[in-house]
Length: 272
Image 1 (tube, rainbow, N blue to C red):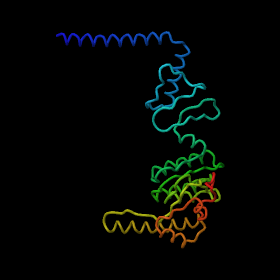
Image 2 (cartoon, rainbow, N blue to C red; image 1 turned 30 degrees about the vertical axis):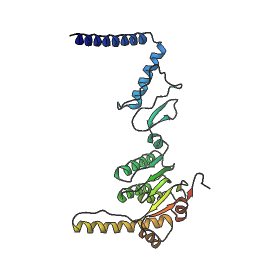
Image 3 (cartoon, rainbow, N blue to C red; image 1 turned 45 degrees about the horizontal axis):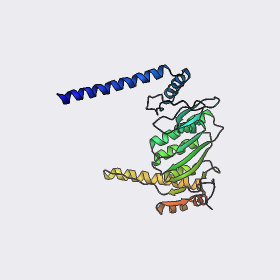
Image 4 (cartoon, rainbow, N blue to C red; image 1 turned 135 degrees about the vertical axis):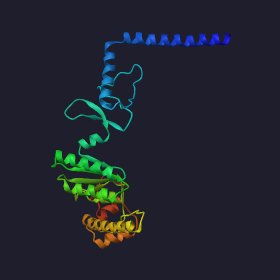
């Protein structure tokens, strides 16, 4: 009995302490300066406007006031950057790729597949529809991937009226090297430490013998198409391109890619 009674008293004490803590908080809020309350309301409104989808936001600590200038704090989730909206005095947190789109910059930074290429294609088409007199910039750091998806991106680059300037900022391997070389001639660039890799297309067919035969024929046709296009991009003969394909993975430095004809200029400081 004594133990249970002591436990009840202890629980009652905890509840009473919590009540006092809440009461003090209510009094503090009641007597808070009007400016501080307005600042908190403005912060909540900015957070709601930034996130939109109801995602979890970075909560400000007690007593925090918005930073000078009224900018919003960065929410949790996908990487976001502070972006000043053109022709206004306001800034906001937006997805990192949104300012790139607005500045006609497209980033190919993943393995090439249907989804990634469709994202790049939609960005190119939208920017070209807005203003076809200005160039578009395609930055590449990709291990390559699907030949079919890459050819769709290539065809779109040739179809739109805007010039597409390509730049290798890391690795342009396999189909990504093809996209790099497909940029506007004379305006294909690379950073000093970037690398390029070219090789012949590969298949991974499984199943019945007839299915394997059909895919093998398609790979041979695609290889012929790529050889012709690489030859046009680089100025090398088809025989030279085939020899480079047959040798397996062919890696190049930025200087070697320049000599090969896949790029036209190396930009940025060198390591000399």
